[in-house]
Length: 277
Image 1: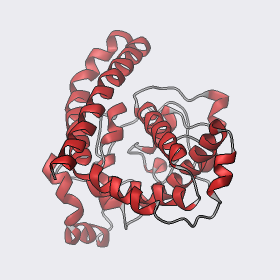
Image 2: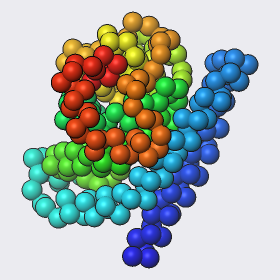
Image 3: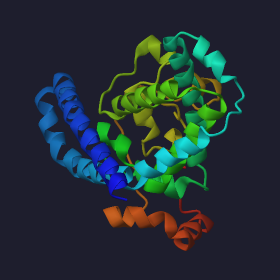
């Protein structure tokens, strides 16, 4: 038990150390883009960031040992759709690129499923940040964090993806996830035909009804374009976040998915105009 706690504590320490460098990068980038106007946005962003940091620590502490056991269990099976020796015969950069593409493919469909009535109560907490910034990436209910890991990782292992490519996929999609959650108005121009831009993902968090059920991919916008969910009318300057009248306290967000009776009563009354599902 002590070893498990030590491993979790090490994960939190490593994550916090990485966040210092990330925070410095995104603050500098925001200052270069917005200049002195950035000072007006710091206070509301800090409030949401404190929530995001707290829930990140909870997820790491509770789920790091669980996810390690799951990975070990999954890799105990030798069967896969694509033979693993084929992956090892590829140059590592090629194998990693394919793994990221497959990871974004399953991530796209898993994300769409999270916006269905079945998983929305868990995924909702990610959309409650009204002042979205790079740290919003960590704003996930523990159960949603776990289902994300289970679905994405199980799919990649089923496809025969070797451990080094899965680790690379997780790192690339994670750090790029920080970038697209940042408050950056970039749309990428012609490159938006391939890649998800910060503006594209910001529209995913917008309160406008036209933005609901759009922009689910993390890295490759080709999936949203191919499946009819792409929508980027320009830089996103509208309000963000779910505004459904429920408590947004830390404990309230953790308990919200379990308040099933209240949630489905709202559904029955068709009072979901402000919920992007």
